[in-house]
Length: 256
Length: 49
Image 1 (cartoon, each protein chain N blue to C red):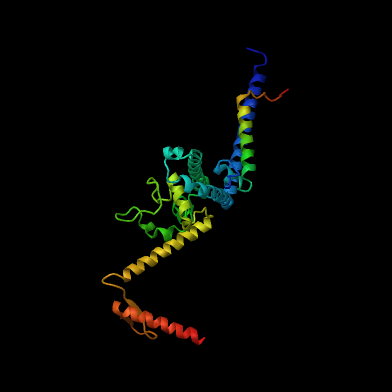
Image 2 (cartoon, one colour):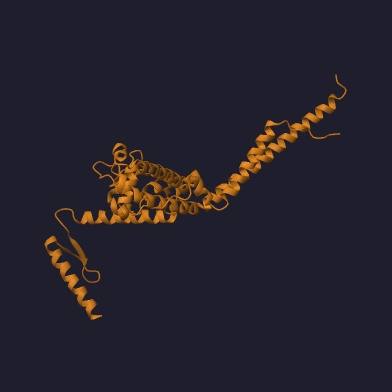
């Protein structure tokens, strides 16, 4: 038995304790930094989204110049006509659009750290309101997506996504630049929520109007006098009533 | 025709725009590298004499 066995045993135990303490210090520091990273990301989501918005604007500018030349051509025709470079650049822009949208989705949900925005799943909010600002106007039936007979969106879409945003493909990009009224965008979280609720209200108004037009035409209910019973006007009366109301409004405006 | 001025991956660029993100991530990377380096080298036993 070595004479210094006891000393060596003590040293080995201390070395193990030292390594364990060091490892623990690393783990604590790592957890702390990851927490700070989460906090920074959650607080700075809109900064990231605005940066992507600039990228999207640049991309659309470039695509707008190329789309009239190559959007409707396949590769062979583009090459035949001497537009091979433009055709390839347009394809790269479509790929980059996909990267931008993927980054947007990850930033919107803070890289998975914020699954919900208010009461909405962040990913769903991104899919519905994160691509084109006017989605509710251009596709009023968006709320019925997936139900039988519901019309699909007017833009090229990817069936893998339940909410059917414009696809990040050549066709999708061509559609975006050909339809500026769609207003492609990368909204901040607040802007996306506003657009979502506004589109939802438009849908609710449409539903109400649809109910009013059931069973043979429009009817209008007016409450006559304070607390009086509502008076029902049948379709034939509505046009006359509308004209009379407009006339009355004109008279009132003129008297002011 | 405009050209895209920043060719970095969109996610990288977006994260860079988040205040403090890159600074914290760099610190985390540094920590991980140092931890790895120490784990792969034999730590000297503490001086006990």
